[in-house]
Length: 111
Length: 111
Image (cartoon, rainbow over all chains, first blue to last red; front, side, top):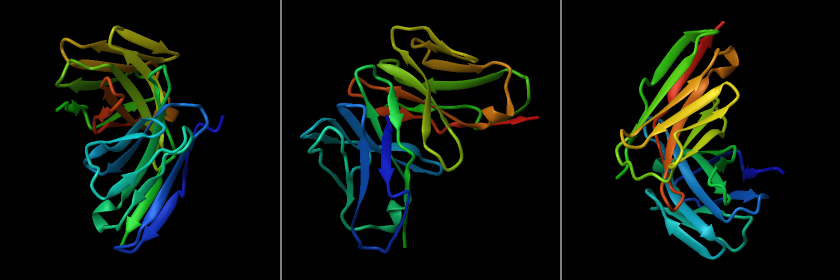
């Protein structure tokens, strides 16, 4: 199993551009989520999904969209990038055993 | 809102010493607690998951305890090695699977 994979690893955007961060898992996990990690702020939940077709907001959802059309994929969309969205983004998944598994992260810089 | 605190923020020990990492949380109504390791520039690696009904969990040189009533968890790493140098994060789970993270303890094990 590849576990949780994320692409791209690095991305530089200009203010106002849009992009999609990809996340996929091959463990047949129903639950998936997105976190951002900022110095001094720790990891904070952006959005989560308890299964295909179901998503909900976390602590810091503004400026981000998600959808969950398949069990495997949970993309995160930045609609109009802002410098405040410069961060490291992590995707995670969880199966029935409650242990959560994280991907390697995407380092995003918005100029 | 759940608040998770990890003290100290940084710790340096000589090789061979036992490591004791602390995690405290304000709301005792947690579902699970999970410890992670994060190496610089990398994702989070799950170390141990303690369910709310458990008092401790062990894996190799790692032992984690949980005292819900006092809002504390402790991660013990026996006979530390330079390869244990990393940042250690604890996170509480709620019943929806949402995680609340501490800021982490940065550990350096010197040869």
